[in-house]
Length: 236
Ligand SMILES: Cc1ncc(C[n+]2csc(CCO)c2C)c(N)n1
Image (spheres, protein in one colour):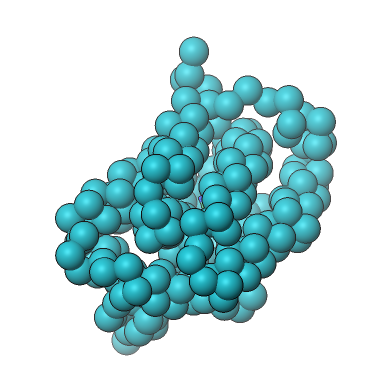
């Protein structure tokens, strides 16, 4: 029996609803994102450590820009419940995730000052400014669709690598990263995000706007795939 993680079997949440439909309709780009060579290098531990360090620095800068976009989802919300959910996510990132990321980076020899001073890569500039543009000019649904690949993708990558018997655990310097994204706490967060996206989709008439939403999702997936190389320093 194939014991590797399978979205259709192991994540029924993605079978129906807007999140699952978007993911299925962008499968080619989605696979390039979640099966990127960088991800394979994390799984078997062969990714050069310097590539990972540079990725962590760009990922810190990404989290900061992501949080700014998320903050706009408080403003874009039209019910108090949606505002509360959005505000909770913003606080969660600022108070918990960012400090965790900074701490994790310390373990890799990167201090907070280095994180804050690092120049933004072209991949980061493209991705974060795309998100911020959709956040500023779209409504709550455009914003959540644009942020969805980040959440669902890392959830799926974490779940896959965590469950796959071929993933190297012993002596793999990236195992703690895999365990974080494949763990229950992060899975719960992702599932909450999928429910929220499906709910807001129904509320904001996603079916009638589907081609536009799909284009936003697709662009974000392509930018996620490109982001694995954000730390490789080809930018000028
Ligand atoms: C490039 C990039 N994409 C996605 C994530 C994962 N991620 C960042 S914020 C967030 C949601 C709020 O916790 C998630 C899932 C990442 N770290 N870096």
